Amino acid sequence: MDKNERTRRKGVSYAKWGYIFILPFFIAYFIFTLTPQIMTIYNSFFENYRDGLTQVGPNFVGLENYVKLFTPDKSGTIGMVKYFGNTLVLWIMGAVPQIVVALLLAVFFTSYRLNIKGQQFFKTVIYMPNLIMAAAFSMLFFTLFSPVGPVNQVLVAHGVLEKSIDFLSLKVPVRVLISLMNFLMWFGNTTILLMAGIQGIDQNLFEAAEIDGANSLQVFFRVTLPLLAPILVYTVITAMIGGLQMFDVPQVLTNGKGTPDRANMTMVMYLNNYLQTSKNYGMAGAVSVVLFAVSSALSLFVYNSLSSQYREAPKKRNRI
Image (tube, rainbow, N blue to C red; front, side):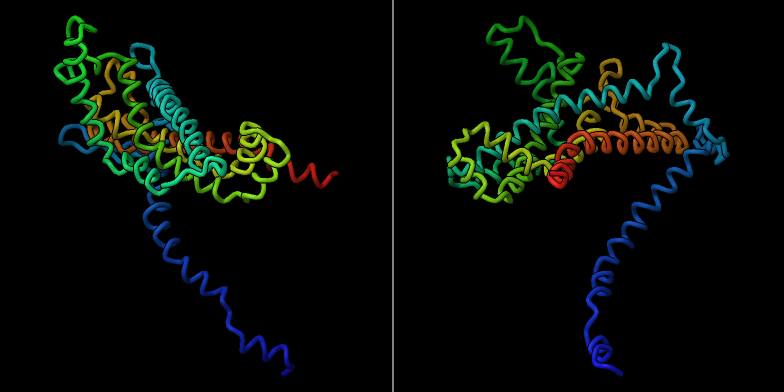
């Protein structure tokens, strides 16, 4: 037995311990995530619902559930398309201001020029709305903007309105309220993520830019934003996935009906109607699969769109 072989036998293999430590995660993922996903796809090909006290199915129907999702109703509306449009509008109205404001606050709090004190305090304050349950937050806004709520009373008392308005029965005000609540609940979390990303950038780069005479805008667009791209891409994708799964805020604020005229009915609310009302597990599975496919496609599109220029930069340098 040579010396190298004896050394290998005496040495400790740390690789196997790495696999052992991450094994619980994969076991939990397989049991609680992957298996339900596979069963959802499987159930989407079956007719399986309750009609009164009678259980119909499960009967294999192939793609019939998917065809029903994209079949127009009596009014000529395709429910799946309408609810996806509602979800997308609500997400854009809440996520775009959220990311813009969070990015500005992150740059402001981490500025090496301003050197703001008490960053931990500000992090705690802006994160606090995220600790409030979405249902409780929705009930608060429901009470504030109800016909007999304080907002109406203040507006009537100051002569802004002649009489109370039912804000929750109007399409635009309800959408604004839903977007505002999502913004207030999540901009703090996004700000902290972006602050962590900026603090991970080498401060020497900012000092070098200042020595070269770069102003604040040039530093932001030429140094901060390019180096923050990985965190920003992650933030946008997670915000988009969360937006497509929007449920609790519009569910509580519109009493689960997406009022007015289903203009605020989201895709997950549509899915919940199949699960809670008709117990139609086949159609619910089909909605879940479509939602998963749309989320995956949009995530891939956003990732390629936002990160393409930064992934191509090393290739350009190598060619030079």
